[in-house]
Image (cartoon, rainbow, N blue to C red; front, side, top):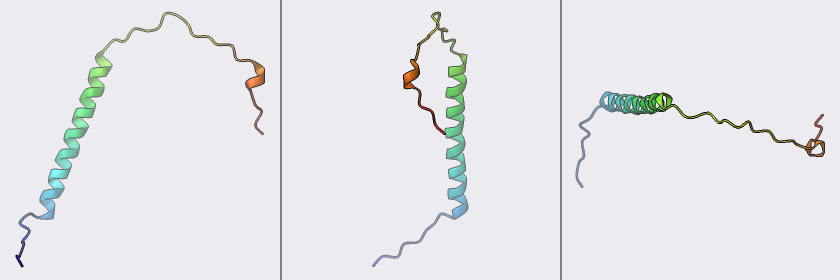
Length: 60
């Protein structure tokens, strides 16, 4: 039977977890920022659909 000794402390794993979360958050914020910079064209045609009254249900 071999003896296994942990050499890492819990604070070290906590720091690495915080760093990983910050990196993921920074990547997500960068993607959102870059998507915000893209100028998507707005639709020129208005979308209008007539819904008949028989499809509505009254909920009380």
